Image (tube, rainbow, N blue to C red; front, side, top):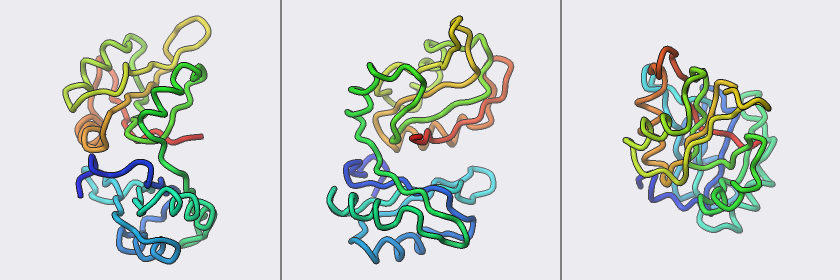
Length: 187
């Protein structure tokens, strides 16, 4: 199943994963509370190891609610799992008008840090839209004077596109700075 086929209403973000955790282990763990459709652990493009988080797709939104409550805080290899429901892309768009402090919904949203102060929303859009359609215009987080804080968010319509952008843009240079790209996490 491709990432773009993943049903976001039925998908959980699972974070704070130890390096020993595998997709098979997560599958077996979540199978204890619900039928599992798929598991995805995004991998570092150089080391080919997972990055400490993943996505578990279950059968129904009811399964997601139950698993989120049952699995959150469970210790695995000495680490407490962070388990959150992935927000629907449509919800991201609706909440964006109330989103003035830089928080983002989890989903196919990327966090880009170490941005040159000259990078603006238009440049981010031009660079990242080559990997697929954006849900909305990227955001550069700014201080009260409008100066860039050096990080921003790029909102994709699908995981397939965000996965490709993360793989190809993490560690690349935008203007004079090497940027770091990762999935945005809900606070």
